[in-house]
Length: 124
Image (tube, rainbow, N blue to C red):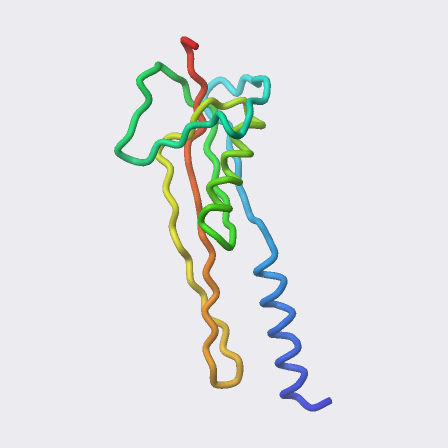
């Protein structure tokens, strides 16, 4: 095996490993009370300029990265549901692009980062 083949093999393995990982962070806020899990389909997503009409309290902050924007939002909804949340506030989806150089060809890899504040309605 020559050095070029080894380098290509290593870069391919790194790219596959990076593309297949889901990174997420979940931080509890407020009184850190635990709630019964909710259903993912019932979680309402509010973007930066939207607010629910019901009163609520924050229970956590969630950030996750995935290969597709819809997958990233669905993943944070799943995590919010396990926390017992009713909605996600201040949601945003950003794209992070990194470039892997394969010999002389740049290959962009996009990762979508979704974040939001999990909330529990206080007057359900």
